[in-house]
Length: 149
Image (tube, rainbow, N blue to C red; front, side):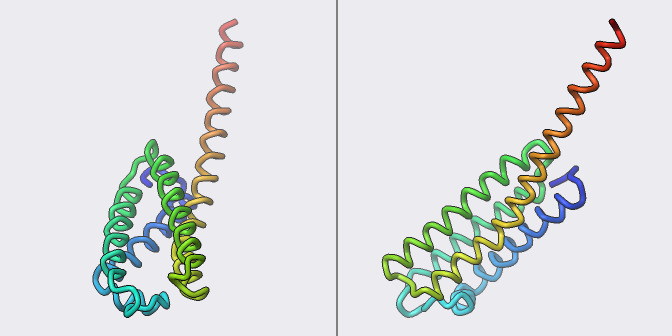
């Protein structure tokens, strides 16, 4: 995230805050988070363990992205996007299997979507920015070769 334009850093920071904040809550009190996401604790006795595994994963991801330099942040954002899409698909499939009702399924999907949206926008902006920088470099090379000739 270091060395980014302020608007890209804001989006990446927002994603990190969402991931880190939900994860700290999920790790510290998985039962409370499950209640907030409308996930029944009584019918999912192993779910607090899964919530803690998810929480550690997202804490690590948030720290890695927040401390990433300019050259690695795009790769990390791609990984975050893949993880969030997988989380959305997993929640959808679990809902289709009847493990969660429609409200619970959407609650799970929306936690991943909340991080996915700023990630996608930040990645798009980074891609546009790097394309513009590449065009600028190529333009300078052409201008300098014309000056030499």
